[in-house]
Image 1 (spheres, rainbow, N blue to C red):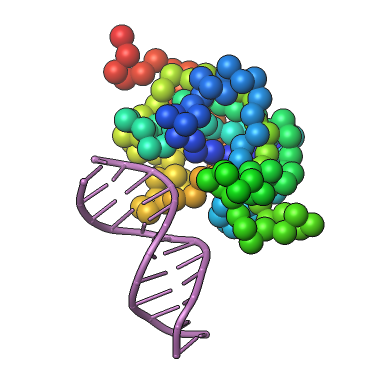
Image 2: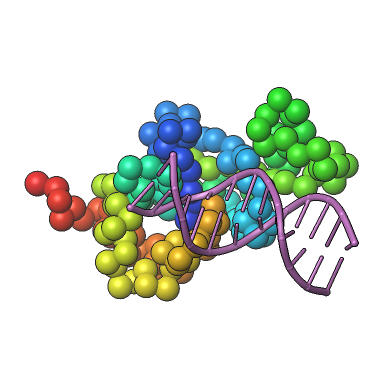
Length: 156
DNA sequence: GCCAACGTTGGC
DNA sequence: GCCAACGTTGGC
């Protein structure tokens, strides 16, 4: 099984929205490096659900892949912000995967993630990182889940 | 709102 | 193939 980290803006779609939706097509990915990772995802893989562009940004929960890569319909919708006029319907350029919630975690703010030695090499923390999907090692995934299950340093 | 980092586009 | 311009991401 592989592990991933997926970013979402909570103002648009946060972890609680995923819980309410039960499952959701993860659309709008328009980056070739991210596409490589999307296509490598397999049913049953787990993902850390990260809130980006938030105050504060951080980890919100665990999700799992329940549907593997398939063409993202939003690339063909001219009214959608993700529309891509260069994508050929016979050979769609962009894919989505379908995710479902597994477990909500204690929110782990980015500041705290930066202090975790297990994440020292993680691309999430690299300067200038803009990828919306990144692979995690087993250790990185386990460390985040453990931190999210433990009582927070700022919690009572 | 600002800015740094990065990806993409398009002229040459 | 180079590179400047532009757009987007994401932290602050």
